[in-house]
Image (cartoon, rainbow, N blue to C red; front, side, top):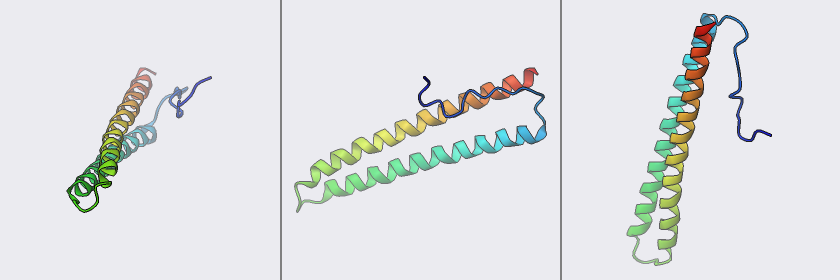
Length: 100
């Protein structure tokens, strides 16, 4: 049983035409946009956490700050991981198409 495969087991069964190469390029660009949105979300969460840390009137916000920092790092790591997985998958697909 494969978990979290996300359709990465695709193998081209015939010659790849120009339309398919363009689809791979669109997917590559979408992957880069997704990485940038993960980084942007991570930075916004980091800034929000630092702003909560600056509030002196509510000492209980320190816990929210720690949670925000943890999630900020987690978003960044997940974004990098997903980007590298899809990039590796696209590269493998591209080279498999070149061999045929």
